[in-house]
Length: 82
Image (cartoon, rainbow, N blue to C red):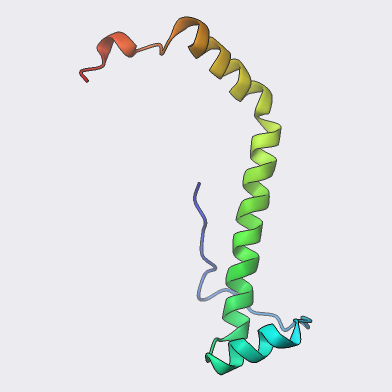
């Protein structure tokens, strides 16, 4: 799975985000850039959700392929050199 990082030149738009006070305090104490951390976390959440959706959408095909391999073995197994 490929998780694309946000483009550095992407247009930014201000938004309000509510965070738990202790998390915000710790992040500030550690000099973590809140905007960058939030963006990275949201990008990861997007990638996870897309992967979940892809798996759900392709579940039937994956199961079919797995059943074929279980029944018949790997299609090109006779050409493996290991």
